[in-house]
Image (tube, rainbow, N blue to C red; front, side):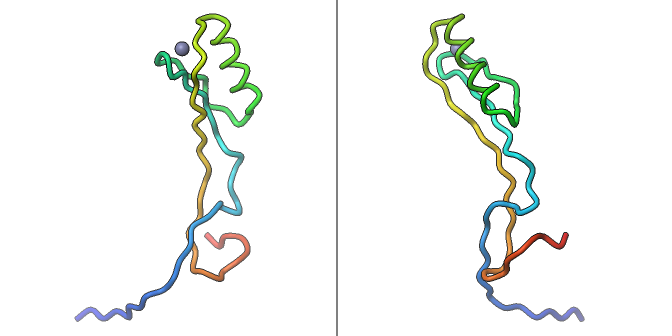
Length: 81
Ligand SMILES: [Zn+2]
């Protein structure tokens, strides 16, 4: 027989306190091209400006990836794992 204690608990999710810098890239909305993934926003912006100058395309989407961490509500500080 397997026994377990179950209860409801409020958890939250937010930025991982041990996270690395956000990774981002810029994608052209007028064609399928996109910048290399980078942690340098200026490099991503420069790619869009160069792409606009070369193609005349003006619509872009910035895609950002940020690490998140889930924890019980009220818990603060760093991660233990
Ligand atoms: Zn384009």
